[in-house]
Image 1: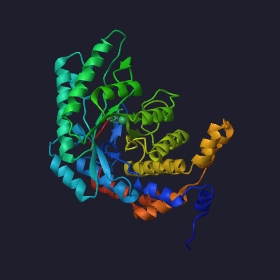
Image 2: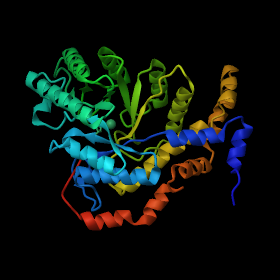
Image 3: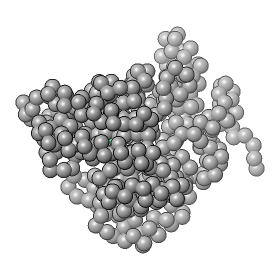
Image 4: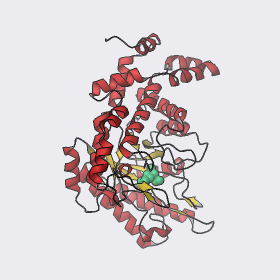
Length: 404
Ligand code: PSV
Ligand code: MN
């Protein structure tokens, strides 16, 4: 039996256009990370899963499976050292194409070599700095070959002890290094600068927060922007406020979605703080509706699951993100603004509460019908037996493809 779902009528009664919401839900693309399909673990060890991907091709195949079930994950972020170890970029690109996905953000890796003990771009050792810059320049070249729009930079640089190094000197090194890499980028490439306030044991990181990432990005030019990884904030930070501020400055370049209870926990997006994810999406949805705001943003996932089956966890993540977006699109913005302007605190808050509490499945189902994918991707995937099939084919191998 067909007919309009009651939710559509409810939204229409508020002056919202449910069909337009469905259309927007079909348009949002979410990039999944190659390292999210490989074995990973904690700082102390890797926990193997028989179905985990062991090669770049397998990681891409798993990303393609997520796209097949969700219809909105057509690209896969790669980590240069973990995915292009053989240097054969063209065959990876072709393989991705053959499976209906493409290579997304290029992530250089300047945090695993012995030379980077005291840092990479910020190291007091000129040869370490040089090695890191050269690796990023090579990554730009790889990005040209893969047709990637984003060069996504994260640095595990910092000091462990007060007085260990000159923080301002390091700031200067970072500025010079980033500028050099920026100058090498083609006109259509965007540099994303990720921040993180800590690594275990650190006294300071060289790009500790969004303000520092923003200052470095501005020192490079307009095609350098800030990347917000949801797990890279100190507890209690208001990430929605950070997102709103960066959007208004035209400096928000992308996300690394995940969730955390304590630190960089790599938990499923929306599993711990669904309300926060919703409020972040409220800012994003409003930015999309504002012709004066640049809302060309890279929506990427950065999660390595140790406990959940990896493809399953990634599909669940995509669903969580879509759910938050759908709810944000259901906010009665006109009433919200009137109440905000009138200082009606509970009334304004209620606009958020009403949207957050909606069961938005009818909108998601309609979007998935349009995309030609299962209405409930996670359910369909779990019923398919694909993980079990992969486990038999791949077996229990000692291969890790990313950090835990
Ligand atoms: C670092 O914690 C990070 O968030 C960076 O984005 C890395 O590229 C990624 O995780 C690696 O797992
Ligand atoms: Mn990240």
